[in-house]
Image (cartoon, rainbow, N blue to C red; front, side, top):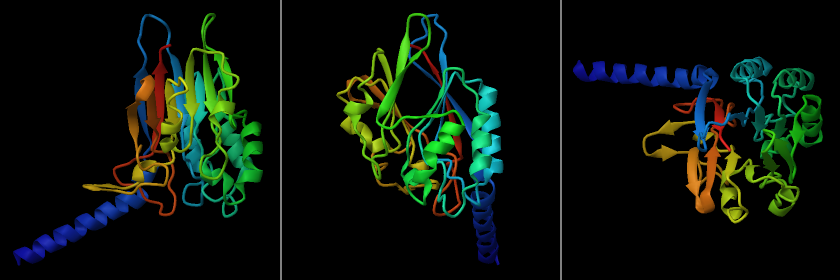
Length: 269
């Protein structure tokens, strides 16, 4: 009788975890706040990073609206998107609704984005630049921009083309740099090891989804997100890498112990 009781208890727990992973956690957006640099009395630059939204039937535009509200409540100076807007654009691509939602994001110093591997797949490559432009995002494709952040200082935001399906070129990306502080956007985090000798202070990536499911002694890892998986890494030459675990899902619409993430950085330069 006791064994049967524990069996039913275990079964109920498993069912509860499965229901939570499919129906609750994928919608439970968390905001992580971080400080980067030394506060010497200067005003910080507030940067919001979004990644891996993967809009699809199971993650529709209504979820995107919730993201927009949360981001705008942070009052960011800069918004950075590190790729994978749609999961499979050919299957589900509500273009106008997405443009309207992304267009509501506000950041006085600009909104910038790079390509992800899913932005090339599913027919999205032909529409992704148009969607971003219509929503006032600047798409950085092996290019960058010097952003004035005060009367005396600027930061350089460079964006690599996708390293899996595009053609990422670090020298081209940094060609226009005229700032002492550089933020590099690279969808795939493992690309970081190839750029560490280019005087880059901060690399922001996504792609990994943190595995979507976190179990003891087990993690699912994506190609080019095997070495760097989630959170902060201190790399050579004083380079910091942050791997955002993303907002949506792919393949299986499930998250467990890896809730959707918005990353907010107070950057002191």
